[in-house]
Length: 269
Image 1 (cartoon, rainbow, N blue to C red):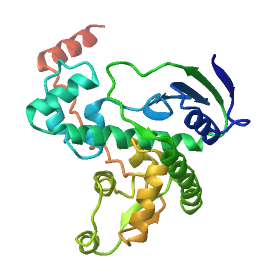
Image 2 (cartoon, one colour):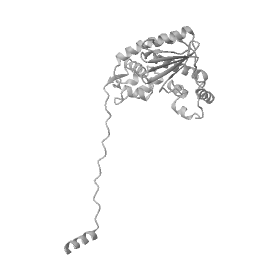
Image 3 (cartoon, rainbow, N blue to C red):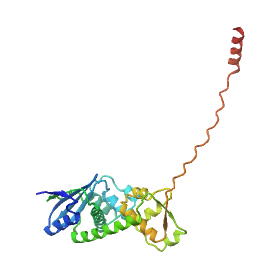
Image 4 (cartoon, one colour):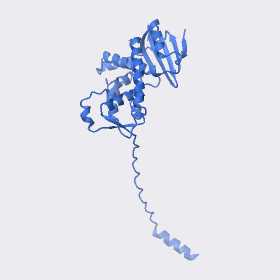
């Protein structure tokens, strides 16, 4: 029997605790505003999360965690249709191994699940015995750890939102950032943000360009600020290039014969 309700009355933490204690198998669909997510469980363990609007193709996941790059992704045969087919292709090409794929899927599943802890309003629907599509690569994750880390991150996100309330601000490098960069190890997402820093681009625009959530970009920017690599500045509007001056077009030459005929006609009037 399906269970339906509102997140204001029953939080995600409470729902996950129920699934965990009862060792349930099924799908929990959450809706907040225009967003919808589906969380899948097998015998009380988290196995897969799907979030509307999020690129969940296996190649995208592997690019995001730095296991393959965009150029390598473009070189792959395009006949694969499912994540499992993509996985076999990647392993056969020697670009990656099975352990790397499982780790990327695990990280993606956890990060997506943690985002859902910020959903405090909206609807939920639990349908028992519903499993993810067969073509998806799944993992087995203990819900106790997910609940603990998700709850901890909610507190962290609230603090980051207080520290960086306006994502319309821009970033610029401090004096000689290359010296500090040599002493700091950055993740692939952090490198992407660093490479996109420009006073004419807002933090929000950088996040959108790299498919980062508000919480992810806040955490990255806060780390860069704390390391002294960047500073917050008002966004500068890009200076549009002035249009080239219009060339003066000389009037078309008038044939002398035409002028003479006109003068002759006027004389005869």
